[in-house]
Image (cartoon, rainbow, N blue to C red; front, side, top):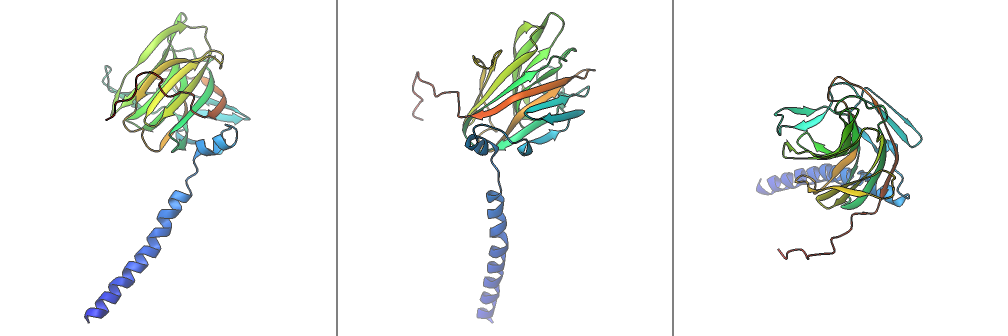
Length: 245
């Protein structure tokens, strides 16, 4: 009876192993890393690898051009200063486990016309952990070029004022493990640093891409072009050496 019980237990173990192992292996094997495939194909991004976190009022893709039309009352913000939480902006993202790369995109926000209309680059991990860079319309005199890092449910907002007649902006989003850099450019050639930050939930698999939203009673169409993936353009620091521990 004892040996019979052992044989039955071993049989159950073999059944469980044969059923569970292929499923786990298949999940890893089926992961399509968008950045890896882009780097292998000259930096070109396959639109079919993008997913909507939330869909916009309208969108279209034609060649290498993506258009997003916003709905009123859409935004990303968590708690700080305003003490409210907004988490309904449409985000179009791809997924990667690559630790070092850069993502470049050109934004055209000619149609933005109402306070806080915005579009730009984003890494949206979940409702309480994300990073974005954009131009936010303010009035006919100026607008905000800035970035927001949200860690563990609290947002910050770092900005500088630029003239309201600026209607296009390039962004370069770069990753070095769990540290990130956002840069901007008016011509797509000369980029200036906007922010360096650490993302507490940004060490493993991430999702990143573009977004557009209209926090108040407005709607506009943002246009994204010239998207590409490159090897990391945010080079290793060449000054003080890292601490040993």
